[in-house]
Image 1: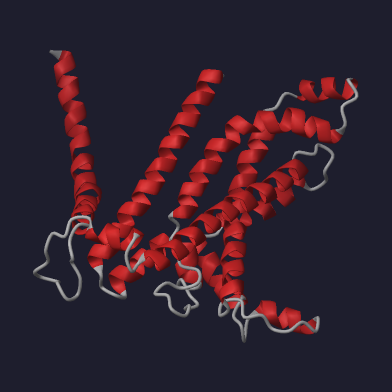
Image 2: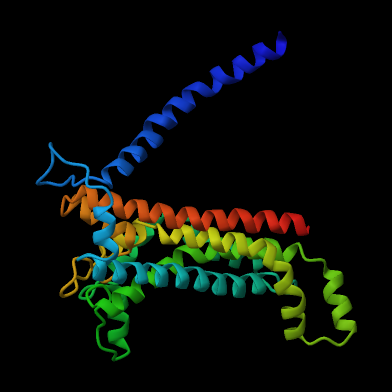
Amino acid sequence: MGRNVSRWAILLYLLPAGILTGTLVLLPNLYSLYLAFTNHSLYHFEEYDWVGIRNFYRIVTGPEIHTFLQVFLWTLVWATVSVAGAMAIGLALALLLNTPKLRGRNLLRTLFIFPWAMPSFISVLMWQGLLNSHLGAVNRILYHFHAGPIAWLDDPFWAKISVLMVNLWLSFPFMMSVLLGALQSIPAELYEAASVDGASPWQRFFKITVPQLRSAVLPVAITSFAFNFNQFGGIYLLTGGGPPLLASQAGATDILVTYSYKLAFDQFRFGMACAYSVIIFAVVASISSVNFKLTGAFKDVD
């Protein structure tokens, strides 16, 4: 009797959260999935029809294929460079902060954490002002070194460099913290034994540090890739997906999620936007499943 009462108490406790989650998360996602198979748009706003997989067909083989490939390939580059760059910077700083004889370690750690402590949208808007082509502080500094002004946010190439640079600024503190914690968990006896055996610093790094970091870093790297693959704010607040490109509906820095937003709220092609959202969900879900499998595999090894 007591167990039944406790089960009912747990169910009643979870019921409001379940109703809220279903109302705010599950139902909108199911509705978006339904719209992906319709021609819902500004021209078919009230009376729209079921069109099956026509939206997906247009994306992968029809008139949308050029824009889709452009945006999809840039999304892969954006996510890969963001994760790899953040890991490289984070590892270098973590190795520096893990040096026992380094003076001012606490101060340096605080300074390196600062980009992570600030709200990301404030940091992005701050960088938008700094990288302004005409009045930005970065170009003013370059001018004093007799370097020509760079169209950081107006040129397609430099706009991509800018969004990657700002994203690295935002993401390296997290990687540094993860890697620093993993480095501090490696037993010092391993390095002492390697030094006695005559191993060089590079040999100790690749034979001890890298293998010990793998189980901690790989799941984080995969999760970060999925996060960056679907990151909206960093690009949209900095460049709005622009600058525009000739013969393309997407901007130079648009990734899948920002282009899907434009399809919905700039071009009012809601069915097509939801089809892109389904593709994004499929990719992120696949990456997450790989992450779960790798995490389980590492636990089995341990």
